[in-house]
Amino acid sequence: MRLLPLLSLLLCLNVPVTATAQTGDPLPRWSEGYLDIHHINTGRGDAAFLILPDGTTLLIDAGDHSIRDHLERFQLMLMDPKPDNSRQPAEWVARYIQRLLSDRSAAEIDYGLITHFHPDHMGGLYPGVKSSSRGSWKISGITEIAEHLPVGKLLDRGWPDYNWPQPLESDYIVNYRQFLEWQTAEGGTTVERFQPGRRDQITLLHQPEAYPEFEIRNIAANGEVWTGVAENTRLHVPPLDHLAEADTPPENMTSIAIRLSYGKFDYYTGGDLFGLPSPGAPQWHDMETPVARAVGPVDVHVLNHHGYHDAASNFFLKTLRPRIHIIHAEVASHPGQRVLSRLLSTRLYSGQRDIFATNVKEETMAVYDNTGGINTPYGHIVIRVNPGGESYHIYILDDSNEENRVKARFGPYQSR
Image (cartoon, rainbow, N blue to C red; front, side):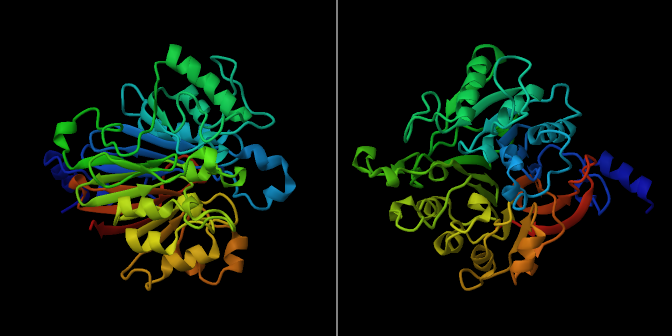
């Protein structure tokens, strides 16, 4: 059968042709019933954009750590900006999202989730950062996203007081709070504190009844972790007034973690949580152990802390047993060499696994002897889960331009 009649037949049968994208093709648009997870690579911060099965949208982080650009020693460590340095990172992210939503009458982000308060996840301040057209705050990261796209609900770990485990007073936090004051008063955004244990804080907004097998479970934040029973949680941090100053929970430890489930498909992401505390730090700084117990086995695992040396502990990997590992890399130490060894180890868990990275520095590859375990090419990493969650593909998109063309396609993978 020739191509044109075949396409006409598929359209008449209402069968999406999303699974037909080949190398060099633009990524076909999302269609209803599919779950798309886009790990967007700017080289300068984390950003993941999800289109849920009914069309509800979720942005997880919008980082910008360009503050380091003026420090020569960091220049050698940082990834190259993608697609280039002509725009701030979050503007590239906003443009990417706008392209995905260009067929909608109104492009907007239903949910924005900030996993923790570091510039590479929420946006920082640095010389030359732009000012908002709406108020006195600067725009970087999530504050810049909102210049281009309305955000319906924004969730973070600190709202409304931003004082745990101590008052958060960095310049970019003060800037962020100015932004929130305007957004809640005039911008139409609702802001909520993320609450571990819940499964009704991020929900399908358009046709929830059509997808009863879909759920986003809040796993952890601020050292509080879901127990796996009902909505019960446990705080894994001792009373702060009993702690030495050096033992105060570091910001990475406070990160938000979620598990997304769609039928048999499970996906985990957890900001910059870690499982190997710094030398001399208390063992309860290990958040990966309680989080792993709550999450259980998954199909796709976004590495905590970009795959830095303190993440992806033995217990964490043995418990999650992911088929797919995703590394959102920003500097030459992403991933750590021993982390990569653990990801590849069949002694921790048996079976096949694939590793994808947004970037890997040439210097990193020159030092490691096992980077052959990371699939190439690098770029935007897109997970496209088929309706019902039974199977999925991985697409790598060219990040050197804005055409969203497929550089490589992997799968289909069967969900477990």
